[in-house]
Length: 104
Image 1 (cartoon, rainbow, N blue to C red):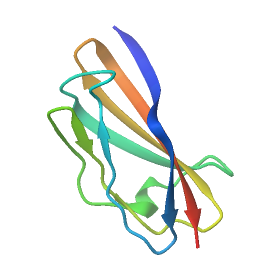
Image 2 (cartoon, one colour; image 1 turned 180 degrees about the vertical axis):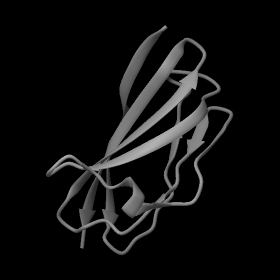
Image 3 (cartoon, helix red, strand yellow; image 1 turned 120 degrees about the horizontal axis):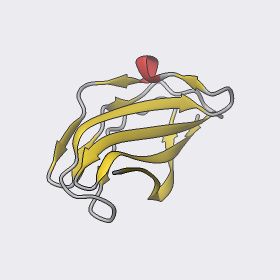
Image 4 (cartoon, one colour; image 1 turned 180 degrees about the horizontal axis):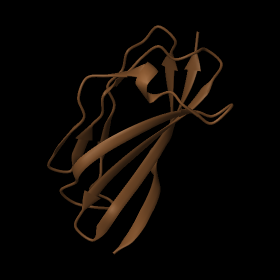
């Protein structure tokens, strides 16, 4: 099995500094029945892992949909990379990612 890394189709999301958003990823195009999902949020300007500072709640997988932890407390003017890792048939591990541009 090989590792697979893919940018989600929507690529870049825009989120306000005061917003709290729970994103969902559909894996149907690359893998079925994802399990054991995890996520990391990196601030792109310096590569810092800010996951513990900006995520709350639980991450879950149901069918081909991974519902992420809520993301909030981002800094306006910064870009963040959200990496989602999971296992699925034929992929061990698989990873997809998207960016969030934070606005005021």
